[in-house]
Length: 294
Image (cartoon, rainbow, N blue to C red; front, side, top):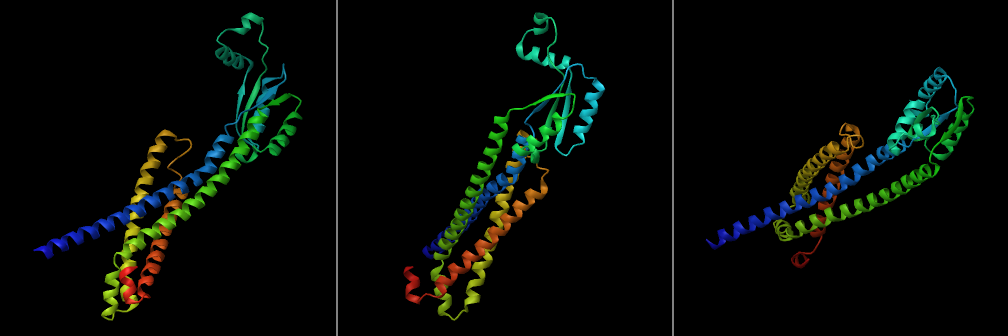
């Protein structure tokens, strides 16, 4: 009776150890997946920020509207430009009145504002040198008075994007190293609890490959289950973020998301297999007396 209770207790401990191992692998892979998705979306987010920087092309007074529309059409066909919006004098006045909260035209007696074209550039052309070249091209048009934009803001965005990319890459490398270490230590502890079993199998003449096989298969199964759990929670997180930030996140980026999921499977399977291999080999190559204490 006592022996049966002891066997039940040992089975519960083993099931608990397996559950803990799977949960640990899932948590580590989830964190690694979050970092992978952040890296994947960094480029998209930086492009989103850059493409929302506004450039205003001020048009000279008394310019024919058709000439302005012709220039807008040329801009729309340019590789530099993502989108444009023509703002008439009247529309500019209405927007300014809304911002100021009172009718400045009644006070001045006339509308001093100029027509303009609001421009948003493609992300690859928002660097300072590209903007300077684009500004030179535009100011050659006789109807253009000047191009206005916040130069400090453009420099600030470009500098911050570079810094963020560098630090994210560094943090990703650190998380990868920590993840590998955690997976390795988790499996080593599990196999350590089985060192007496390995020793007993050696004593009855089992070969190294025969002893190693169930541990490797079990570690791969644990990694597979852990990866699926991590991917499930990543998918739920992405779905939630897509409802909050549809312009940035976008669950439609299937190729990038699948790439991250594939890397999680690969990293999980590869490093659990290698960790289990080296951990089992450690006890296979020990003297029998050492197996009891290490």
